[in-house]
Image (cartoon, rainbow, N blue to C red):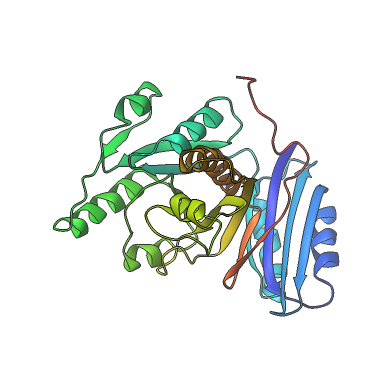
Length: 294
């Protein structure tokens, strides 16, 4: 059997679930997992289904058969082979904790992606990347060469076939044009529990305010800096006895975890952009299984 993922977003109306279920049953498919959400405020319906073809129908045939039904309900939809790994381009500057965490998860199969390259405006992690047999692209960025640097970045994206770009603590602001061109295909990790403590040193700000929780936020990148739809967040508790350096270390761990969760959700087609927010469904059974233990 071949496993597939169907994602659907459309105006809410009666009969959507029944129509989808009937189509899959009539084409010899068995639903293995299903999640849905009806947003009463926006009038939008969201659904993610995993299913197995028990009669050997391939993806193209299933898509062709589903298209008329999708048109009936004005669906924004996609159907994917569940075993296909999304091509991901990572970007990093001088903080390597997220990059190293993602490389480890990728190496053991806990992050089901194909890393097609790493872009950096520094050479700090060139050896680490090359040792993983992953292409490394050094694109230096200055005030004077930003348009040329971004053109080179776009060339890397296109040449590598990257379907998703991950800013794994990449400390450069992307242009509005690039954000719009790749809308919904760039994920960032923000070292703060948004929207508090923006800026260069959020942990110092948090320490000075005596906060009891620090956290991290992963979101889709938009032209509005750090204001994109949020995919994943988490926090860690701190006390008055801890130092700013403790905050940084604890924050580093939660940043890596939150970014990995956000990427995992995106590449498994569990995320839907819903205006300024997201709908994020839980992973299907077995969705977190690693290919190797370590």
